[in-house]
Structures are given as C-alpha cells and as structure tokens.
Amino acid sequence: MLALTRKKGSSIMIGSDIEITVLGIQGEQVKLGIVAPKEISVHRKEIFEQIQKENAEAAQSSNIDLQNLF
Image (cartoon, rainbow, N blue to C red; front, side, top):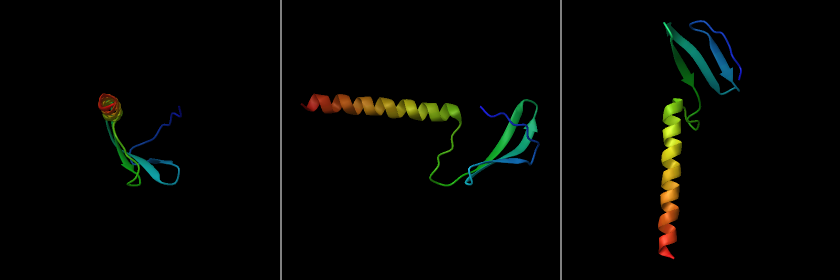
C-alpha cells in the first residue's frame, strides 16, 4: 500500500486518467473528489463488496436454474 500525506486542495494521479483531490477535512473525515473515465466504476468499498456479493448470488442462482432444465 502506498501511503501519502496531502493537504486540502491537493491531488494525486492514478495513471493519466484518474485524479483524486482532497476537498475537505473535518475531524477524522476526509472528503475526496474523484475524476475518472466513464468506463471505470467508482464505489465506496462497502458498496463494491455488496455488488460483488449480489453478482455471485445471481450467478449461482442462474447456474441452479440451468441445472434444473436438464
């Protein structure tokens, strides 16, 4: 993991397409702005994990449905 220290208003770049900017800091919360191409999904980790779980469940359900056909 790369750990960086940034101040409000400063940015980091990931490749040449993704920019993350520190918009604000209040106590222990940091507000980030993310600019990325449309084809790259950006989610909070807990939302990403929920999407992954739902996709896995849907795939498993689909496999069960296909097995019942034969």
